[in-house]
Amino acid sequence: MISTIDHLVRPNIRALKPYRSARQDHVSGILLDANENAFGSSVSWDGVPLNRYPDPAQRQLRDRLAEMNGVPPTSIFVGVGSDEVIDLLFRIFCEPGRSNVVIPEPTYGMYRVAAAVQDAEVRSCLLTEEFQLDADVVRRCVDGNTRLVFVCTPNNPTANLLRREAILALTAENAVVVVDEAYLDFADAASLAPSAASTPNLVVTRTLSKAWGLAGARCGYAVAHPSVIDWLMRVKSPYNMNALTASVALEALANQDRMKASVERIIEERRWLEAKLVKLSCVEHVFPSDANFLLVRVSDANRIYAHLAAQGIIVRNRSTELRCDNCLRMTVGTRPQNELLIAALRGVVQ
Ligand SMILES: Cc1ncc(COP(=O)(O)O)c(C=O)c1O
Image (cartoon, rainbow, N blue to C red):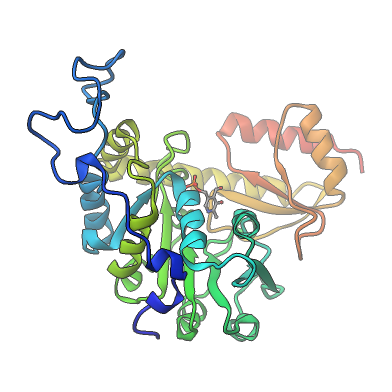
């Protein structure tokens, strides 16, 4: 494990003098410092002071997330979805035209897009046939210009958890290992968040978009060593987390049981859907899932995708992804939605 990641940070970011926003020093008093509208907002919303800029340090939300994850608030960064965290990591660590990132595939497509935006080379390596992480295969792609290694667990689109030891083995490299736990709430596994808080080159990203049902609110977060969080805080836009989302997120996080009940229902539905899918003649294989979706190998993905779309049922065609030929990714829906999906698949003419 490396003791600091500062040498991996781009020189211009190391030299950056961060913007100091008005709300950084004072959040109460007679606030005439930020050119806000002192007369109030044009609409009121559930007691949220919308005429005021939100707390740039996101203190309340970070405190709550810290408590939930068993880490100090200095190890939490809140973003506009975990996609913002991914984007900022590229901007902090990847020198355009020079740095590379290692991505074991098939996996979530945004890592590649964020790499392209930053003009970072993508070094793709394959997960095993069982969609597992082989740390040696990943290691062989790492060189002196590698800055980030992405690992998604449970992985999208394969739905399975990756082996914890293999992930942790990657932290021996001179690069930042980013572990995307967007779907972890659906899995029977512990988060790597506590390890991330004390490992300088391990970043865990999580989101309220999936199990918490808040995809529309756009709230994700990173758990990492305070030094990584400090870099994220320096480069983020001053008020990235808006007051409405922060308020909604705090309200949701106050009731973890509600989220857990929702997860239980989804897992129950996933089992129902899986049991129905395996019996269909157009289904060749349903991959084991630790997430809120199923990866399904079908007889002809393109044709079946179009057949479902024609009936207004939209799934994701993943058949062009490595190792995913003829695979569709299906999000677990409500029982009526799942019944319609199964009925439509029964109508597929072989
Ligand atoms: C693996 C993975 N990570 C991150 C995200 C994005 O999450 P957010 O809504 O927090 O930006 C998704 C969205 O589908 C995802 O599948």
